[in-house]
Each structure stands twice: as C-alpha cells, then as structure tokens.
Amino acid sequence: MLRRSFRSGLRLGLFVGIGFAVYVEPQPGVAAYANEPAHVRMHPDGRVDVFIGSGSHGQGLETTTAQLVAENLGIDFEDVTVRQGDTDSAPFGPGTGGSRSGPMIGQAVTEASLELRDKVVAIAAHLLEAAPEDLEIADGVVSVQGTPTKSVPVQQVANTAYQQSATLPPELDSLLDVVHRSMAPATMWSNATHAAIVELDPATGMVDLLRFVVSEDCGRMINPNIVEGQVHGGVAQGIGGVLYEHNVYDDDGNPLASTFMDYLVPTAHEIPEIETFHIESPASTVGGYKGVGEGGAIGAPAAVFNAVADALAQHGITVTEQPLGPDAVLAKLREAAG
Image 1 (cartoon, rainbow, N blue to C red):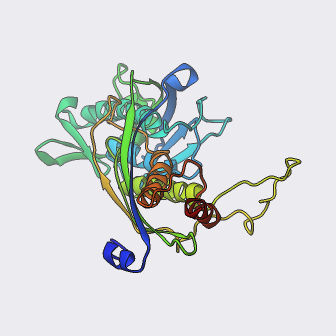
Image 2: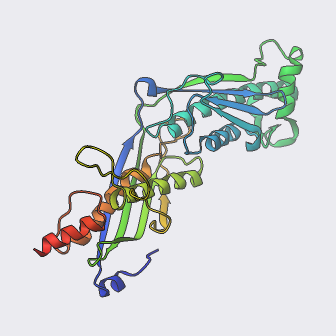
Image 3: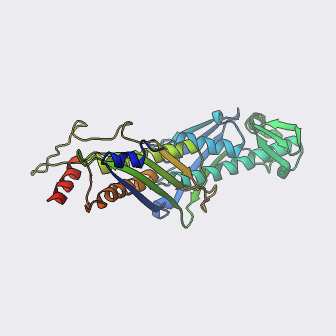
C-alpha cells in the first residue's frame, strides 16, 4: 500500500515517479552445472537421510529439500534430515549458484526420492499381498487404494528390509538406499516484473519509496515463504544499490567506505512493504521448478532507478549513473537550475 497518496506528495512540492523492470533469467545447464546428484537413504526405523553435494547459504535448502523428500516418499517432514556439502559423505556436486538449486537440486532429490519410493512400495506389496500399482503412501503408511485398513507403516517396511530381508523374495531390492545423478533440461527460465513508485524531495535530494510490487514466476513453488523471503531480500539489496550503497576510493585506490558508518545499507525503515504476486508456469524439470535466487536483485535496481529517473525527467533532468543518493540528486538539480 502507498505510504502517502500521489496528490498529497505533489501538493507538498515533491517529485513523484514510477519505474518498471522486466527480466528473464536462464539457469545454467552446461558443463559441471549440467548435472546434480542426490543420495537418499532410509534407516531401519523409517527415518530418512538426504545427502546433497551443494550447500545452502541462506536460501533454505535444508527446508525445501526435506519437503520434497517427505512429499515424494509420503512420510513426515520431521523424519527427514538433510546433510549438505559434506565431502566425507555427500556425492560430488558443482555447488549452488546461478539460481540452480530449485531446478537442479529439486529435480535430483525428487527423482532419487521416487526411486526409493518404488523400493518401499515393492516390499510393502509383498507384505500386503497386493500389486504395487494398487498401493499409495501417505502420512508414513502404505495402504491399498480404497482399502485404508489394509496397510503397513513405512517403518515396518524399512525394518523388514533391513532386519528381515531373508523373508523377502530374492528379486526384491531390500537396499533402501538410492544415489541418483540428475541431468539438466535444455532450458530453464525464471522471470519477473518489478514496479516501484518513489517520492523525491527537491529540497534535500532524499528519495522515499512509496510502493514496490513484484510479480514473479519461479515455476512450481516448493515453499512460498522461502520464495517471498528471497524476493524481499533481493529487492532490499536492489534498493540499497541504487539509493544508498557506494564504494568510494581515494586517488591512491584506498577504500574510504570501510565500515557501515560510511557504507550505507537500507534498514527496515527505508524498505516499503513489498507486495509479491506469484505465477506458476512449470519448467521442463521434474517437478516443474525454476530458480528464484537472483529474482529480487535483478529487477529491483532497474525498477527503482527508472522510478527516480521518471520523477526527475518530468522536470527536464536526465540521470544515467547510480547511486542516486541525496548528494547526486541535488547535484543534478543544481545543474539543471544553471
């Protein structure tokens, strides 16, 4: 919502501008980035460990990975433990980056989980004397579709596989352990549109963000809260890059902005309420996931810059460089005034 109406700002002599930015972002699927491993192992008590070669640096892989495994295995989220980037136990992976975690790690984990699910269902089918295609897994229980009373807990299936494997037919694979390497699809494109409304005070050069709206498409969302968190963080970074953050050096190349007393970053006070809308057009990945990591940071700088440029252009002023802090804005205003 607007912090203040257009008209009230204009009555106060403030400049108002609107800026838009639209982008598409490819996720790399070449060289080492063209594949991703996942190792999913079920313990005798039905708990599951997931080993991935990449590691989270704040984008919530420990949550989304566990969600995917729990969803595809039909078990409880709390029964899944994610182990990231441990070179002693995890399969080799090219690492996180380029918004590839959702599409590539998500696909690898999904495919590995489905392979493990097939093993669990095959053993459960033997225990229930039913056809595997007639079984379903939900809430940690394997049951015959339409006959929920004919069921067996996943924990019992796992215990049978490990502790009573001699009772199973020899053709059944009782090793509830899957290592899978997933290949990237031909193309993966995420996209978004950002819109910003700003208010500029010609007396001080200060820019106030009145409203910021994002409409983004990262394919099927694994966890909407994490998607919004990444978008909001990226938008804050973009706002900072246009209006506040600036690396300044002296003539000898020494950095003058060496502390946060000199290098400004936006706080919660400077960030408006970010309105986020989602479009889910599935990718060609297994699960339909696209990347979202850079989504906020790509569109926000252009949208904010365009909004400030629009506010100044209405008064015959052109800006082509950032950051657009108060000093830079006032310099442009003085220049225009002669």
